[in-house]
Image (cartoon, rainbow, N blue to C red; front, side, top):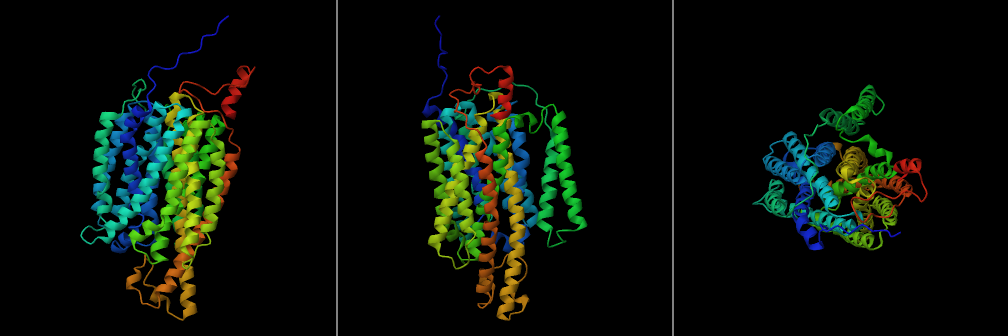
Length: 530
């Protein structure tokens, strides 16, 4: 008896065809990441002009992360139902409009609102890029292209602070151009996508949007973030306000789970969590997100307010972390494609991230830059080895018709962890800076009023004898924030250890094979254990 092997698919895209199709997606990813990084070094100047404090600094960042968190599962679910190409173009249009409005902001409130809209568009671009890649390329070959995504992510992270710094330092441009600069790139990306992106689309059917689920999860995360931001300053950590917000946030989360169980098209299909890999990777992504967004958010503040650097210089000084991310992501992608093994990169990445953050926790205003560069390189390498490969592990686990929901679920947890982490770390930073500043002023015998208020300080306007006291407080405060972030990466490492490595599939239609001789019960159990 002869066995006929299945013929290889005749419509398999060549490497060149995939790159052509990805060109618009990669450009869109560059723009989406740029929307966050271009303001990182400009924020101290922006908030000085708009009279915002440390809490406003945090909320300008977390507003975008929060809307990405809420919107990502919606984009993912829609991608399983309607045209992915149309969706990614719609996300780019939302981004363009939001960016134009953000550049016109006249107050902190308006800027934060526009950042929410930017996050909705950027979240769609980021999530749909991975989803479109998964639709075109089987898991075994996906590593090399995920490396390109990581490299573009790194390029935008490198270019963003530099572009933003140059814009802010150029008097005839000003910080508002930090929001306008991405618009032409976005328009080009829309046109490129129209010409190059051709995907096998799912059977069109009228989508049922889980608006209630989206509202509940957003309300839950937002309420907990407000509690974290205000506790210890506007009210005590142990207080009736804390009780109301924490209980309310958890209750809303519980309602979200109940709604998802009954929804016709749930925002996050709970059946996905039958897969152990999905559960562990999603939770690990949340902890990695704390390190990812925490470092990129507060590094610019460290170099400008502790090291007295300009926004442009601050962007240049973060290059070691970004280069580590770019190189590790690209190299790991090629090695994964060659050998089909991915878990070792996740383990090594979470270890390096934890070590890098722990060492960055020793940073002070007078720490030598050579040491800081080494610490940032370790943290960046860790991020490059983990962020894209957690998505790859999940995509290798689920069937093709769940790729969108599964991919966006991992991104959802990563941005949710990042949003809540930045909110918590920002609140901690504000508290620590105020405490260290008060201590420094007391030791120097200077009245507390000499600090210049509770907002982001303009070091150029402070008295000469006050500047070193303030820079010391910011250096110590940011170092404390990095030290607190390190244990989150350790938890991510422990979670990754329990993910079972499954060989990468060579086709999107394959399912991981059950153990030899396994019956139906074993195959069902495999859904839980893979």
